[in-house]
Image (tube, rainbow, N blue to C red; front, top):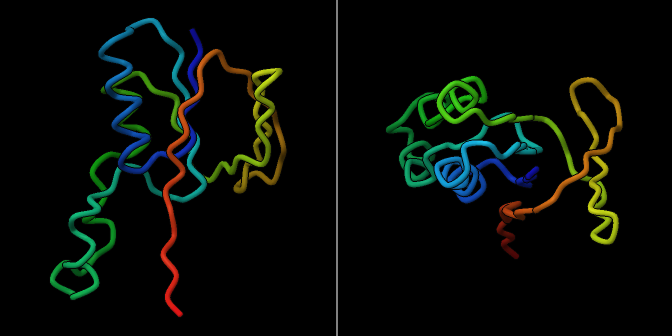
Length: 119
């Protein structure tokens, strides 16, 4: 089974790690548009308040850590551009390498996060 997780922070990373515990043989790919995955959201107020000085101190797991610990294929700086649910395919843009590519999947988990807006 091939599972693609869209979003690698908090919910997405947790879902992928849990899935690995349930299925040791699944191919699991995490696609994250940002540079970081799995950072401590609860630490954000401390970062904003400058109690935590470095943003890197909020990072809980790196892509390499997730590969070693859970055998997950984590792709940061990869933005999902289109999802074809009928064909079970995702069009992705690799931001760092400036190239488009496509992945197929058997199961899809959407955990893209959110932005807050203030008027």
